[in-house]
Image 1: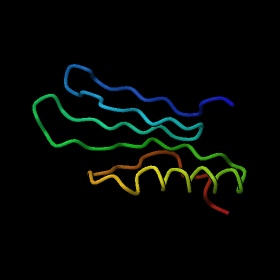
Image 2: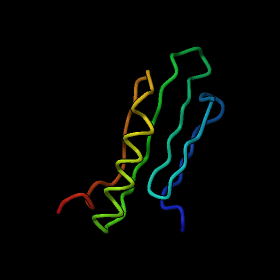
Image 3: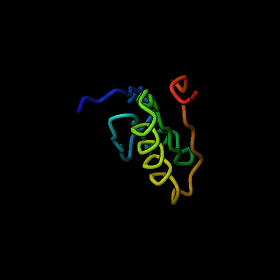
Image 4: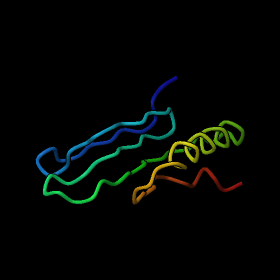
Length: 82
């Protein structure tokens, strides 16, 4: 399937350590180049189909369940209103 989310960052100030991809979201494990703590950011755009969305959000939840980092989840959650 197609990827529904893209991510961008300023490589002068942010160093990306890892990228986690799914069709409905993208996760970045990163840190500022000035030595700040590592953090995770997830950009989410859920699929409008309820069952597909539930599977994707469950996978997303499992992806950061074991992260011991500050986490931000951003995106378009209009699709989650049933």
